[in-house]
Length: 305
Image 1 (tube, helix red, strand yellow):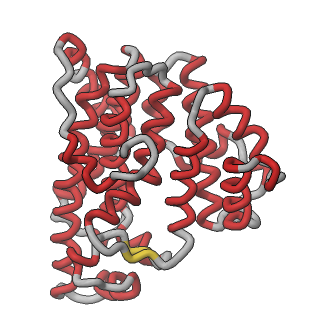
Image 2 (cartoon, one colour):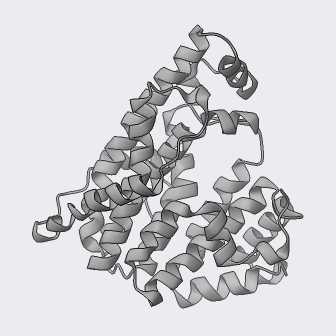
């Protein structure tokens, strides 16, 4: 459904698209929670532009990108508020441009080549959000950004596992060609509609691999939560646990990607919130060294290379 300018508000964006974030945001105070909601809503609006859900969205997205690089070349209505926000919150325009580059990539037929392409894409559209959110949440240690990137990547990998069928219907295949024999999105859709087949099984195996990769990044990302203030630590731990649970449910149902999107209900979110509290004792321990090999594929991208 096409969105109007009246839809471009934090409250509307969170209500429609950010249920997991909205749940986790309950653990933040009003000031930090408001800033985090504002950042999330900007990111969601940019995503809606990329998907064409907002009138003139793709063109506006490119204009906003140009405006962030050179303020004299764009007069998009969203740009003044966006620029004012990132300047006040000391968010790098460069990393926001990296996010937009990932969203622009989605406007074409997507068929990622390999795991490197998958991780670089996941960094652009989600690792960048982790970095920006760390700033909003009051994180002052730059070492924390490595872990924030990992958590963002992990959550994006979960999204991809959840949305294999939906993405294929939009001409997108994020599962690497090296994992699925270079299937086109149309072939993924056909495999979902057929009886059990080699193609369907190959995609299920790729989803298994995707979720295993996500777990590696979740393990790293959650270790960095100790860099955040306590309330922010708990809020992000809850958000991560809710996303992680989606993968658990997908695995529990035999990685049947062809049955559509997996969701978490209120009861499950409550259980995830309790599990997230178990990360709080980590604050009493020293932070382990970050495994730099997790970012080997990201060299050259903003804030990680």
